[in-house]
Image (tube, rainbow, N blue to C red; front, side, top):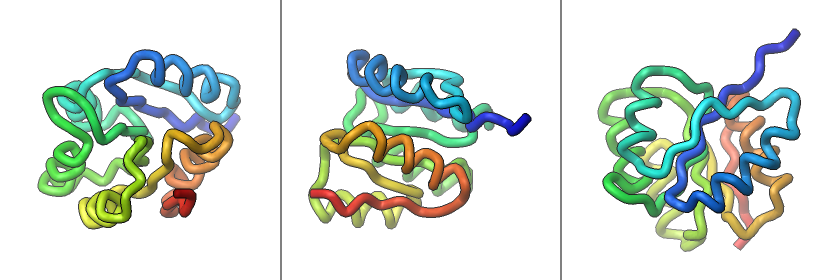
Length: 132
């Protein structure tokens, strides 16, 4: 049996967490190991090496997604990070690429795009949606 992709979901909106987790839970090859509502909590789990991929919002309390990416880069932590956010401005996308994000999906896109992006990023490839 193939190992499931373990996912950390990080978003400050519980409704968003519940919504995307319902789609992910339907996928046999994906497993949510934790859902957190702050960048600080996300960093703690990532630093323990407990997940294969992080689905991260940019706008969060305590430590935002940009700062999470900065700290991971400084610490040379290679866990793939897929940014899932409402921000779709070109400068934000350029910044997250520079900070080492492995992918980007806008929250306005269909859930199938997020599922596809998770699999792509978990396999070591980049996924930057061109939907604006």
